[in-house]
Length: 428
Ligand code: AMP
Image (cartoon, rainbow, N blue to C red; front, side, top):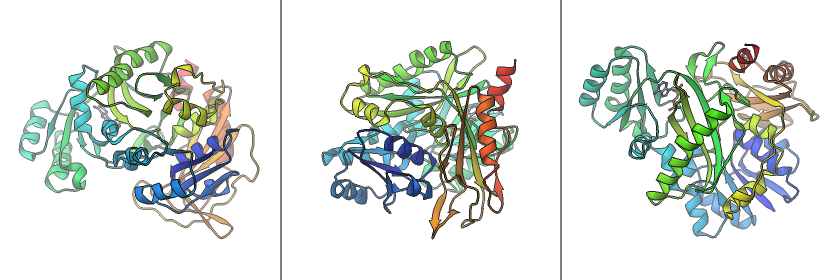
């Protein structure tokens, strides 16, 4: 089989690496990929943008691709799966209609409310004055969210009224977020512990992936600006078997059933970002219509089953028969970023110390990298994700940092405490 992975980040490197291990797979193409996928055995980069759906359709047809797996949300929300299916091409991911769960926060909040799925109280606004009035009525802390896709930057958790008013004014009044901010959601501030939960589904059957947790804040101690994610680990001890059961019964199943009632069948990876309240209720913060980055990297490092076979079974309606096998070890990924990320940062820095041979307990996944002749250089904010495996999260952390410390470039930045919550929980 020939597989096409759409995207060029760390998630896509992990997916391509995993697919290339499938005995059924002869070659994996990645569009556009990065230096990591270029150097990966059995994997070939193709210089087509992940957002150019027409060019991707053409690529899949001329290369006789048997299965395309979509990494990022933008092509999913734009309807890439529908367009592939119209041409009779197999494509793994939700349709445009199903991807609204990520593409529109206002759609999702209305959907959750209508189907009685636990989430924070909220109101949607497309005009500034009523939004400001509601914010003043509710008081701080309060959360302001741009409706559309904003590359993870459209959420302001405001601790003061002034901050909340400024965020709403920014989004609705000044157009800072473009079309994504034409509508906003003003939401109750939830307290509790965050967890993410990812499943593979064909719309009816659900196969939960190993639990995982990421760190969104840039700096040690979970402070500093919000980022796409500075590291992640699996399993996440906050998701106990009881909580997992509750998430499945109170969130995932009613979501899929509710979508079907509304005429939408969800096929693909579904990612729920949750706040587990003190009462143990999983409240939905957000849905993503794809795998998380960097959660995918530790999850793929633990996945022993054949990913291609799982995707094929999902598309063929055979998901119920599937068993997934996980490496019992914990996996932890440290994101190595360009200094200055998530604001401005340099590109084109030469990376030294990358491993030349594979080891059994660590893997370096690339994100913002490209080849410059024989050199690997930086080309984005999040550059690498170094994953270690160990018998506990603490051991996986030690392995990951041992390998992280061997790699460097000018102005490299990474957190030194990825996994601290899971590790202190284990110590209790
Ligand atoms: P989102 O992009 O919706 O996942 O939001 C980004 C981050 O903002 C989340 O990971 C949470 O840490 C935080 N957040 C979002 N909504 C809320 C809420 N209602 N209460 C507290 N924190 C929130």
